[in-house]
Length: 239
Image (cartoon, rainbow, N blue to C red; front, side):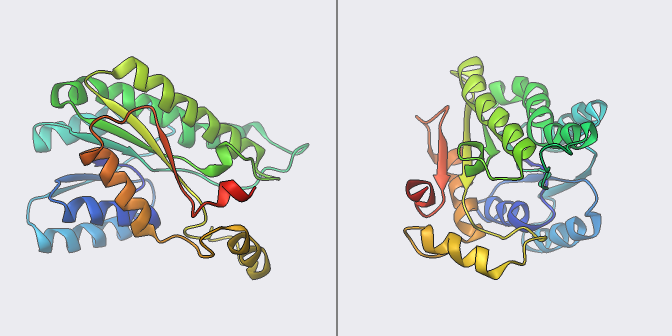
């Protein structure tokens, strides 16, 4: 399986969860190579020769085919693709630059699409699956983050469209987390507390709960495709 953005945060927990379930993994990073190397060292101690490190800038489409090729050469097949890599930052309307638009759409919509396209022949051979890491803000936009929300909405539409295009061999689904790991730039404790208070389960989620959902969609959800599962503690119900 190939997991993008696997070096840190939720991506690393997804990698650990899939590896513990017995899957061999190609793990991608863009800049966090030290973190990725440490993660892989830990996984290799648990099961030698079970991982592959990949580093690439997914905004460069010429690098994407090589990720799929390296994965299939190393493991002989590809059973799953987890599109986790993402950029997230605010874009104040009226001041949005084209570079911001390009960066957010490149990581959240364009790269996942072209990764899926490159992976599709191999996934069809293995009757594999794609899981896209989305965001509840694709459905309920966050003020001040219009371009990010639009890019995630495009990725959500892609999830539905590719489920049609790649069936019956390949299943395509998404996981939309709520408040799980606060953005590294968000230190507003009052704002965070308000979000938790509006969440029916009255807590933030754990990265392991997102990873468990990804594993279920990849391995166990044999009759599920074109679905986006909200793993948000019920937050979208409360608005």
